[in-house]
Image (tube, rainbow, N blue to C red; front, side, top):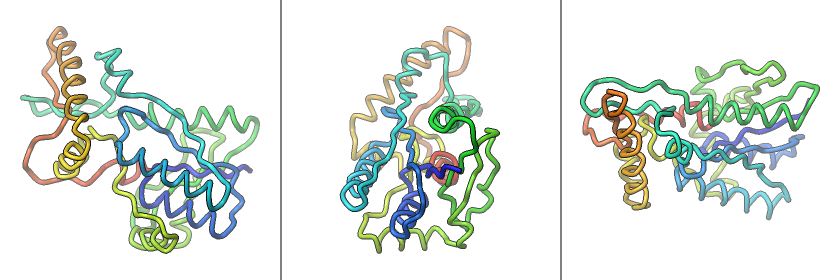
Length: 240
């Protein structure tokens, strides 16, 4: 059965790659789904950094599947797969982004790349987040959890990355993800100022469409000062 690592650019999946390479696991491929303009620029830079390390140290590479969710929403503003909050009303849009832009593209790729048999898909989930474990929704794909099998925690994953001489990544998720904390979103916008303009363009385009349909406006970048939430995608969806 082919063995494939799903790489999200976060701590656990980076540690998974380090273990697989340093211990000589039989890995057929490492695959990353890049959401291009929607992806955090910091995550895109880190994935490029790990690719360079893999090429230089192990002669391996990462297969990158590109899906530009930001551009898709600009082209079709009625399509809003991200669970943004309403500007005035207390509601949250239905969350479809992970399934449509991370899970399904990877499943389609694996079915095309490895036809006819089952594929073992290794996911970077640590034992302290075992509740993230789930069976694959695709019949021919079997989810495998090496970090859980080894009882490795997130902090131990950080140690694995540092011992390999790599920088520890920040949380991975789209830069406009509503599950990011206000602090992490603000830090990204300050470091990459173009994101604020991109957010405004997208918000204006979507809200123009929503007003035409008699729907309440949404907010793309969080601005509340209440209790900060953890990063939902890092907790088991985008960083899979």
